[in-house]
Structure formats: C-alpha cells, structure tokens
Amino acid sequence: MEQDINIKITDRDGVTHAIVAPTDMAMNLMEVVRSYELAPEGTIGICGGMAMCASCQCYVLSNTELPEMQDDEEAMLSEAFDVKENSRLGCQIQMTPAMEGLEVELAPES
Amino acid sequence: MIKTDILIIGAGPTGLFAVFEAGLLKLKCHLIDALPQQGGQCSELYPKKPIYDIPAYPEILAGDLTHKLMEQCKQFEPGFTLGERAETIDKQEDGTFIVTTNKGTKHQAPVVAIAGGLGSFEPRKPLIHNIADFEDKGVEYMIKEPEFYRDKKVVIAGGGDSALDWSIFLSDIASSVTLIHRRNEFRGHLDSVEKVQELKTAGKINLITPAEVVGILGDKKLKGIVVKQAEHIEKEFELECDHFIPLFGLSPKLGPIANWGLEIEKNAIKVNNALDYQTNIPGIYAIGDVNTYPGKLKLILCGFHEATLMCQSAYQIINPGKRFVLKYTTVSGVNGFDGTRKEAPKAVVKKIE
Image (cartoon, rainbow over all chains, first blue to last red; front, side, top):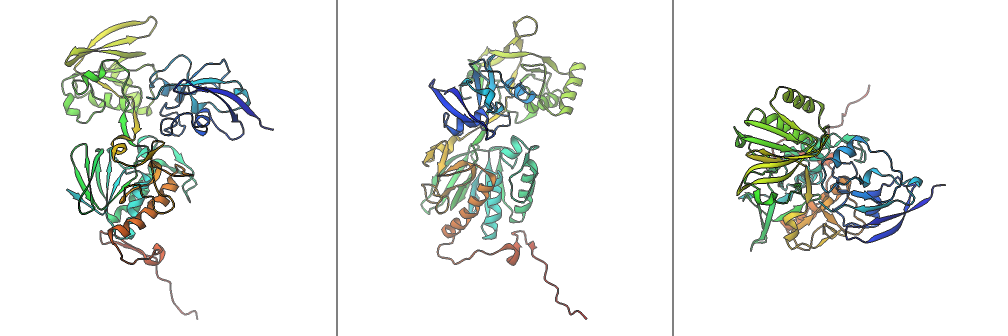
C-alpha cells in the first residue's frame, strides 16, 4: 500500500511547515506546495510543471537522495536567477516514499 | 479609436473561442494581447507540447489548438491589437469603456472581457545591481527593431531559443555579436544550435561560456559590461559594447489590470460564477485562467465554458430586452460576418424503387 510521507517546506517568508504529502497521486513538490497554498497562486508552477519557468525553484536542505536532474531541468536552472548549488525545480521532484524527510526552502519569486 | 461589441483582453484559447461564441450572437470582437502573436501561453511557452484534455481531441499540440481556434472564429473577423498591453480602462457616460494600451491605442466597447490568463508576459530581468539605470540606454530586454542594432557592438545573454535566434539574426546586422551563457550547452532547436556553432567557427559570433554578466559600465549610457567567466579558473573582465540584450524568457504578471478596481484574490479576478463570470464592475467580465471563484480550475476547457456564458450575458447588455434563444449550430448553421455560410447538408429525400 502507498504511504504518506513527511516533508518540511520553508516558504518565502521563512516559515517552515511540516506537512504530509501523498505518494499515490503522482504529485510533485511544486504541486504539494500549491495544494497546501504555501505560496500564492500565480507565483509558483506558472508553466504547470514543464520545467519551463523556474517559479518552483527550491533549495534542498536535507541530504535526501533526489532523482537525477534531467537535461531540461538543468537547462532551465542555468537560465534562472538566485540559483545555488542545491537548487532544484520542485516540479521535477516526484513524491515517492524515498522522499521521506525531505527538507526544502522555496527560492525567492523572480 | 477602435470600436467593437466585446473587447477581449488576451488572445489565448479562451479569448479566441469567445470570438466564435460572440459571433453566433452577431456580436463583433476585438482582442488585445501583449504578445506579438495569438495563442497566449500555448504559443509562447509550449507550442510543440501536446495537450490531452481538450474534449474530443485525444491529443493536440498547443500550437495546433491555436491554429484551429483561429480557423474556427475567422468568419467572425476578429480585430487584433498585438504586441501591446492593455494599460488603463475608463468608463464613459454612455456606459461604454475605453481601454488604452501602453502604446496609446484606444479601444471602445460596451463590454470588456478579460481573458488574460496568468497576465501579460514581461521579460525576466537579470539580477545585476545597476541594470535599471541603463534600461533603454543600451540595455533592452526585447528586440523590437533589428535595424536599431546596425553596425553596433551587441552582447546577448541567455541560453534559449530567443538568445540563439537573435544572435544568428543580428550577426548580419551588428558590427559584432557576443553571446554569453552560463553553460556550454544551449537549449534550442537543433538547427539554431548548429547555426550558432557555424557562425562561431566562422568568427561571426563571439561565444563566451560558461559565463555571466555581473555588472554594467557606463555613465548615463551603456559603454560595456563586466563578465565573470568560470571555466578552469574564475576570472572577471570588461567587455566594451553598445548594447546589452538579456534574453531570459518571459514571465506572466497580472500587471496594470490589477489597478482597474477589480476585486482580486490569489492573483486572479473574482467573478460571479453562479451567473455569468462578471466582475464587481458591471460590464467587465473575466474568463479563463485569469478569474477565480470557489472550485475554480485553470483548464482550457473551463475557459471555453466561461466564454460561452459570458457571451450570452454580454448580449443582454448590448441588446437590452431583445429576445433570443440559444440555437444549435447544427440546426442554424454559422453565418460569418464575411458573408460565408456553413450549414449541415440537407437530407436526401428520394424514393427507393
């Protein structure tokens, strides 16, 4: 049976939210942020999750083993602003049991 | 002054379908869009990507959807003001509205339908501390008139299609073209990447990668830029140029519409979804992704529905008290404003012997 996972998301105001995310709804991190309304609508997930806008950029704080970065995510991050070593696009991180304990901080809106 | 029945802000799928529905009610439409082409996000962000939830289309490319919507509404002869952003709205004594764009084009209509999606697409500006001081003084975020760059030293920054395509195009016009990108890899159509490679080899494009522009030099007018290059060892150097064009894509912003006195919630315009998608200002509607109401879903198919109901309500405003009932297109056919008529073929009545 699929399970829920516990992750921590720090919003753009610096507030950390401990939340529970389902792993059986094919949701990604950007969608989890939207479902919990941790960032205003229209400021995250603008392209809908195609790795084409970087509005869901986040900094990964935990040492969770993440899915390998694909070409389109790498290309988008190379054009985005406020990019750090630990930047990822939330829309490219699927909620799977392996993401248990993930901690991220949302990058500033740009 | 451009006059029409329904003035639509936004020429994306919802706005284009509204033209068709309005046409069935003999209402004429004019559309304003900040982008230079129709289709909104579908043509700007992902024209080559498939959409799977348009009813009756198991799969359709976003660009093809735009073409089909244009084809479907063309007999209703919509007018377009493209490449201009709707800036202000003024209610007139006769109840009509005048909408003026950032270029001063004026439009007048008794009904305004905002189908603005996520807002108008604005260029994303790189975080260079003094860049604002040089905007339009050597720094441009979009290329409007290529001839402007004739015999000038131009630096373009970015790694996508527009950076590649403009570098190629300007290499024939400008005295020099330098393309700066944070990585050695570019994301674009294969032939654009190959063409830049060819021009680089021929010495017509100066390529600096992986590098970033970190500063701007000049006094009142741009004289050069500071480049930070990160290959092997990190180094910073100055590069003389007349123009610096950062092309980092576009991001949608609600923009001036936010100041029209409309009720805004969650970066979207609140509407009456129990009735007709009208906003708090009578005569102004909001349809498609730009609106919000309990249970709102930002889907193209929902925008089509909202556009249809909006047109019925607009008809009442434009033709007060005039009777009308919904007709099926299969029964009544489609009479275009251009004199064309589409209709179902008549049944054959013939005796079988």
